Image (cartoon, rainbow, N blue to C red; front, side, top):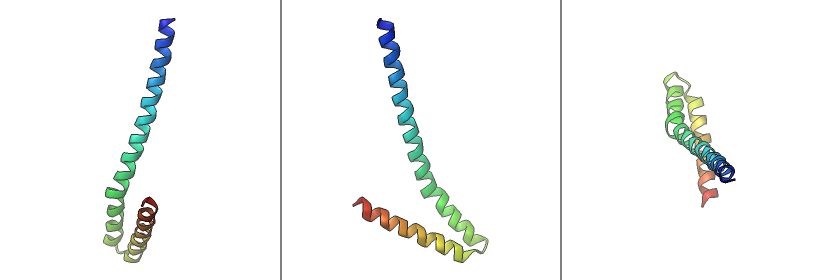
Length: 73
């Protein structure tokens, strides 16, 4: 009986840790994408001569950041 309780508790803790790990990985991926990949993408567009597309992406990112900042407050 005690071993069944232990197994249930162990599975419960393992599932909780798995969910927490997925949430942490998703947060790290979002930060990586916004801080590293988006600026590199915009710089790459400008580097190869697509300035108008880089400016459009930059404007869209700015609008999303403004809306996100207003919605958060």
